[in-house]
Structures are given as C-alpha cells and as structure tokens.
Image (cartoon, rainbow, N blue to C red; front, top):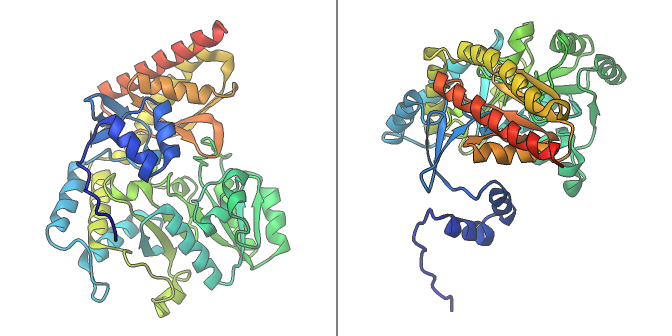
Length: 424
C-alpha cells in the first residue's frame, strides 16, 4: 500500500528552500548558493531582483538573458494577453502569433535569413543546426576551442571543454576543434574535407571569458566556408539582439551565415525561447518534409508572444544603441576601478557593448570578487569555460543611478579583495 504524503506548504524561507534543493533538486546548486550568501530570489523588475528577506540586487548577470531587463512592460503585456486567450497550440492548425514572431524576427536579421525554427533553448537551436547541416551533406563538425554551444549531446560535442564532455563520451563522431581566431588552422581543416564540413563559431566567445577576435575574423571565416563548400553556423545565442551594441555580432562585418542561432534575450526575460534562423536553401529539406525535425512546444503561442514583445521592446526603447552607449561608459570605468585596486592581479578587461569580462591572474580571485559583489548587492556570473574570468551582462535598460550603483559596488568589492591580497 502506498503511503499518502501531504503536500508541503509553499515557503520562501531560505532554510526551507535550501532543504528542498538538497532533498528534491540539486544539492550541488544549494552548495553554490550557500557560498554566495544563500539568498532566495522571489521577485524581479527591470534591472533589480528582490530576495525573500526584502534585499534588492542589481542584476548584471543572468547569462545574457535580460537585455530588456525583467518583466519589461511591453513583453509582459504581450505574454499576459496571450496567456488569457491561447497559450499552447494544438500543432494541427496554423498560428498567427508564430507567423507574427517569425516575420518580426526575420526583419531584424541580415538579408537572406528568413526561415525560422523556434525552440525552447539555445542547446535545442544548436541541435537543429547540426541536423540541418547533415541534411545539407555536411556531417563533419568544426567548432572552436573555448566555444560554448550547450550541453545536450550534439551541442556538447561542439562545446570543447573536457570537464563537461568526458563523463558523457562517446559524443558525436567527426568533430574537430580549432583555435579561435586562427584562420590558418581553420583553412587547413576545411581543405582536408571540402564540401563536408559545418563550422560553428561565436562573434565573441562569452563563456570562454569574453574573447573578442581580431577585426575581420568573421568575414574571413565566411570567405573560407564559401571557398571550401562548408556550411556556416554563427552562434549568437548570447551575443545577439543588441548585447554587443549591434543587433547581431555578424552585422559588424556584414556576414550572412547559413544559420544564425538566437536565444536567451529572445524570450524578453520572461519565457525561454530560442531559434535557428536559416537561409531558404539551408531550410529547404525541412520545407519539403516538416516532420523531419519537430518539437511539441516549438513556436507555442505564449512563447511567440514573448518574442514579439522582446523585439518590440528592443526597437521601441532603442536598446541596441543604449547597449552600445552603456558599454562605452562601463568598460573604461571598470578598467579604471580594477587597475586602481587590483593592478597586477588583473590580466585584462575585455568587452563589447554589454558583454564584459574581467580576467584575473590569481586562482580563485574571480570567485572572491563574485562573493564581494553579491555582498554589495550586485549579481554577476562566472564564465563556464574560464574559471579565471568574472562576467557582466547587465540589461540595456540601466538608468544613470543603476550604472552608478554598479560601478560603486564594483569599486567597493575590488577594494576589499585588493586589501585582502595586500595583507596576505
């Protein structure tokens, strides 16, 4: 006989939430949260997150999701309206919200990218790109060391970090990694397998520690792919939709890939949405047989409403230009503050727009800075492929007081950590 269990009362108390994480969710996540103060987040609006005990934190993290901030009114209105009418479709009929979202998104991308497969996450978009490349006869994959494309099996095969790959091997066959920004190494690989390769690359490597390539790199990659008959996928899941101070990273060099991947900010900070945005030629086989690659919740009306809201908010609030302007303020200010307090311990401050990375020379310093920033009520992120880099991805809706708060918190955190190292 099964013993009945009572449904626990909902609680936001840190102790209760921690216990449930350790019992029913991820004990590892609970341990990480404990290291950063054990806070429980219960509300968000704009650039700010509120914890269960009423403390407010400026969100300069979120792994690139919040270019529009949290609960942007335009996105929220679109989603609430759709929630109250038709949130999930039957998958048997055509949906006007999906059509609207696709039309709006294709209007924001480089000319020639007009066929869209919507999905729920960046990793799913990467998987779709791998499958579409195979339909085009490109079964060899080339990605870059330091690149991050997700952790599902196909995406993980492209994400070149042993710590994530080893426990799940064997992964996809015929995958090669080359050095980011090394066009000679890429050309050598393409020359060995003409007409067989799919290349996937990021305009700026976010999880590698905000690695910005030399000017002209993407343009050369596109030229090499054309020369050797390779299929080009540009992963803009983190860098797109204004994050770099342009709509897309490819815009800076007028590059048109075969597939452009979008995600994170595409859901307007409210719902998880991603997309593989393709040329008509790349998408051709899926046009002829729409059952080759499907997903129950692909282009669900509620998610599509979030896409429409996100694109409207970015355009109507001019957030692409705002990201560019804020980046021009923040990157030099961050550099000055860290140079003043941590001098020799800072290897580099790198960034473009509102994707900013700080590389430290001392092991563990990125973690110490993260903890001190949270103590000063600012949320930042580690870089998943570089333990020595602290990363900021603040929203483009930061006000002048928000910006001043962020820089003051960074200055205080750097001073505290610097003092600690001077006295050690």
